[in-house]
Image (cartoon, rainbow, N blue to C red):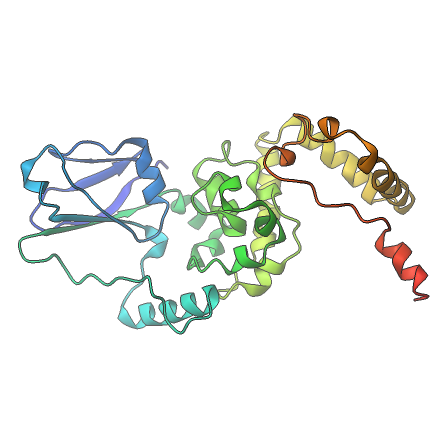
Length: 287
């Protein structure tokens, strides 16, 4: 199913449609592919000014695009989610960035567009349906060791982190096929999620689905096989770990940060410890 408008509320104006990531309205220029950037934000709000129609030159039109999974049934539920969002995100009792609109200002117009944006596919999936509970608190991002070291922009999606790595492939699996692999599957994200989404389990499920679709590059498949072989043999893991700790510091920087090292294009590699954890443990005389 392509992105489509499920429901549109309008006040004294024509309907607005959203299709294939572009926003159109009768008498209004298209916002083009940049609309995807706005649509991916739940409850994103922005004003339209200086359009071709003089009617909008004063900035009296407000339009909000809302993804369908961001819709709640009433004020009672909204109050619960707002408190849950603030406490899980920043520890505040309530957010300082939530706006409430009760309708258009006198003489103005308010348009609310509800967009699917791949959510129907998630709803139809037993493995990923729970991801629609997300309230965008970012608790999973704050605890994720990959996100904390790589940063949000490295994900290439509007919503980064563990939850973004689940949502993005449902919109464009080919473009975002690498995101479910940007995780250690440590489960910390699942532990802190206030709505109890099994995030690391869904990331693992996405890996299997992407592999079945043939969207995993040959290099990644080969690296996974080699890593699986090494991690399945303790003696190989110890030997290769000791070799890496001895060899990498001695290699020239131009070789370590070559084109093959995509991580090193924008950041330094972590400093390698002189000893492994097992070696330090034995030195302390621990059993």
